[in-house]
Length: 249
Image (cartoon, helix red, strand yellow):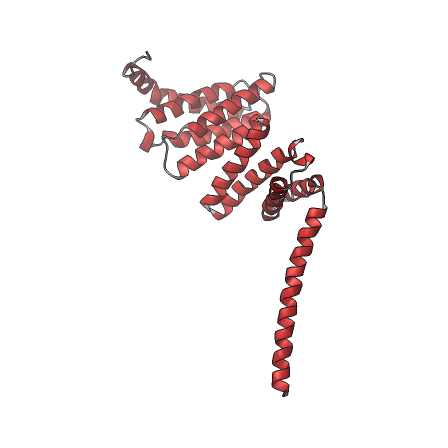
């Protein structure tokens, strides 16, 4: 065997060993992950989430979910860990959707938040789920789909009740977010149908709720302007819609 052949065989053998070591490394990492308890992996997820390491968050969430589905452990279903894992996964996937504009990220985020909500019926999660459903409906141009908007509004009322009928800063931020997405349903393409009218009406209700909180002078002016704009434009439209609608039998 000449020197050229020996060099070729050496490179070939090195490549095979490199591939083997790569596979072995993956297996070792997977084994190390499975050696950790679900609670330990959950703490890692929380750390990744706080650090905004979105890809690491989603990947570890997927590992824990797969682990709990294939070999259920007490920590999987008898604590609130899974509720939070689905929530972290959903929020993170939405952040990735905003960065990548990949529609699958958005649908995966909605599915994750739905799974979280179904476990513990948390209105915080319900709001996020409804908000993203509304965002998705607008994205695909389906402004007649109001279920997300209604879900988000129901969540706001639940949070208002849970907080002792007071509007906290956190709730006020959600109301503002709700109004911004609801306004998208009132754009010209939907302004003359009942979905647009409904969206404007629910915006007025959201303004009423926001004004129960402690507002800065700038916020007061913002909501007063919103109310005047929608009342001026929609008062007659709302009455016309009601007069043309048959009463329920």
